[in-house]
Length: 262
Image (cartoon, rainbow, N blue to C red; front, side, top):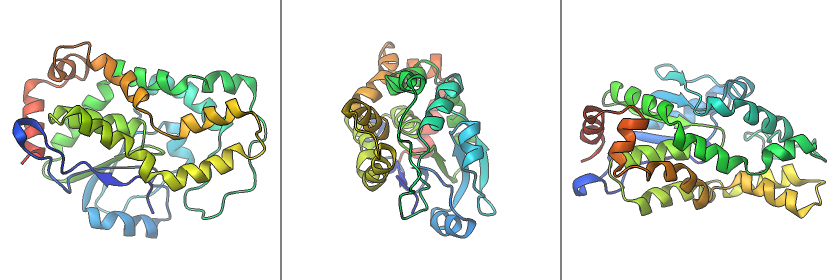
């Protein structure tokens, strides 16, 4: 099954209205055999899938969407592609379609990769908050898509996907507590994947600091989310941030609320 697949519907938004169900979906990687992916996606009646991964990630774990679903590659944090490449070289994650953990595992991690790993996610999240234009562009594309369901995803469906979900919910006037809870639910929906990835990535590693660093990469934490929203809170209201940093104007925000609140 697709890891961390869920929708944004059901939360209370602006003016007491509720976010519509069956319209906005988020998930982890979609790299499954064509027949399986069709089976997973067919019930969602999607029209567009936004892939937030880097070009390297998308090339390494490509997939083919069923007929009628448009694919759009929109790398979320291009400024950090180099760091992402280094991390992916250091930590080759197991294929999510495999039931058994692969035997070939990294037994040691070069010092240069550890330097990248340390503090990577706080930097990554801060960058997303400071440079959210790509997310604003995706939101405009979602609006242009009309009354059709869309899905956006990255590799684990927790970081880049989590921030796009948080920004969409913020645009719809959803309360911070609900935004935070939606974000933190990745730890629940990815529980088995986290266990499997920890087993895979830490086999042969005895240093507890390195094990802790790896685990920190696999989970979501409220402190990561705060790194993004510290940039948001520099503005009096979210709408001010959306206009100034995401390039969403008043018409865009109004249209988003009219489309996805009921």
